[in-house]
Length: 411
Figure 1 (cartoon, rainbow, N blue to C red):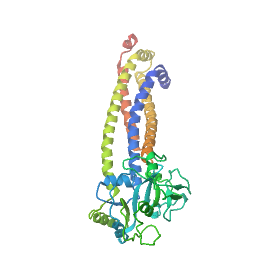
Figure 2 (figure 1 turned 90 degrees about the vertical axis):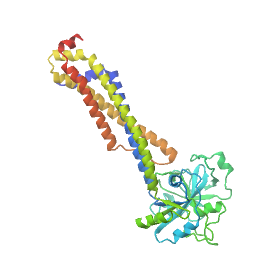
Figure 3 (figure 1 turned 45 degrees about the vertical axis):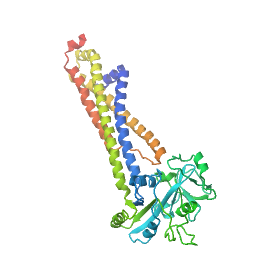
Figure 4 (figure 1 turned 180 degrees about the vertical axis):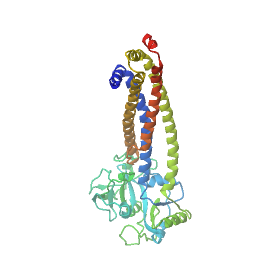
């Protein structure tokens, strides 16, 4: 005998109850899927954004604050280190390349970052998608998401400490702090990096120094930009990105610049601490999700028992007509397992959609491009939920299996 016709008839008769079961399972699955996929995407994107920052050097202070300001452009007031560090790095054989990073100015909400052309090209790893690299003071490159066009001129404004600027929108503070007469001309655009630097405007570090009346860090009469910085006085900078020649050199540099008025660290060191805190928070959310799934399964079990009780006369009639007990058990169990499977599939889709929406909100806030993907942990979680739910579905099926036919017909 074909049990599927009876299963479909049961599901049609219990359509509202079936829909409720599917919805409960879908919500339990979606919460777990969204948490897992979002947390993994955030880890991967934040780690990828720090790939080009091998070693960071700054003035003594908070490593996390320097990391957030330099790598993720969550700009804050950062103390400046002596510019003489730039001269020392120029003469250090352990250094393959380095770039000062200066920030503080904005235009239309986009941060203006002073650095070198070599770092703008990520040490030759990327090339402009439009135009060219800046080659002189007064020129600028824009990130992939900056809403300016090549050839446009922009006027920088001094950022206000603690003031959050929304990219693409000018505010009243900008108009009151403009550096008149210090315009930049956009000469190139960078390709998408998937990081907050896609919303940045990059200019020569010398231009930032000049705008603030600090000189250009080079010997008098020199018009070149970038290293070596050989001026009598070199202005201070908030951060320096160093690309060491070797792993041993990287550790030696970190040790050397952890004293003498500077601090040095690998971004991964700070990210590990952030990920640990993120993992603790994720653990709490996973525990809450597990408790939620447990309550959902308990609710479903009670609902299945009630539904089976309501349908026991139907199943007793089947047995009275000659249907084997195993056939009745299979009809009941297949119906419940089908509802669990539909709920898991719907939860998978709903969780993926929820993670994508949340990623869009995080990207709008931070500039990190999060790539949502469903991995083994999510599918394992769904599999466990389906197996446990299916096993629990056997309980009301077995109860119906053992009930005497006469008792069912009198119900």
